[in-house]
Image (cartoon, rainbow, N blue to C red; front, side, top):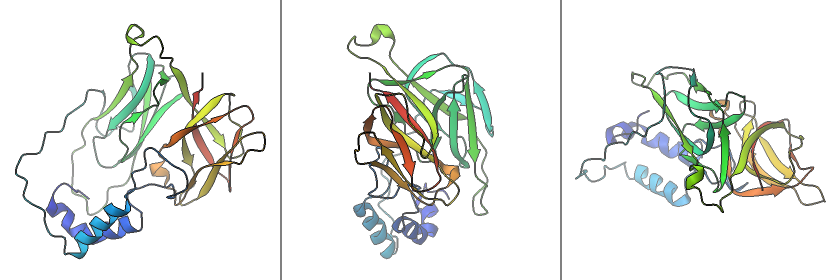
Length: 278
């Protein structure tokens, strides 16, 4: 539903309270308190109390806006035709330090984009903000870039809309002549592994995970290192929705050496985003 104006929101106020208190919204499969993620959008207890107090008070309107809203800034990027489910985009080769995606219609739930050599570049899921890799890290892009777009079905209560072009923006590294000599770019890449599978190569770090579970499934995923060290919980993912298979960026990268593997308490598969440590 649209949430632009007070009149848009008012009919949904009690549903908003219920969805947020039960933590079904914002969409976030990671259980709170099990793993720490830099892109966690879940509401704080204070924010939940504000929503509850507003709804319980009869959802009163706020003060009238006295200044016009700032116009939305359209960032330059790679345009994708309205309504497209796949696209092949010509761009330059090089290294990127992040990305963002602006959907052209509200039915787009997720987007994946890959290099021409088949290597994963990244994903976007509805609600994601701009992704920025850790300082000094970058992903190699080999053009052309292939984009795959996933949409949900339109619901009966949604108003008609005209799809617009979507935009994918890749954030490139500085030119070699502009990069400080002390700054070494560490390669970032993605590996798809089944739970129980080994990670490689040695001397790497886990930056993020992207669980790929069945609809409604749950899994606790850990990183196991050699030497008898206690396994590290990467996250507990519940009520999984394949339409919103987002990347969960760890607040702190996890280093590992040869022989490390990921494990789960049940059948599971995931993409692990890794970074070279040197």
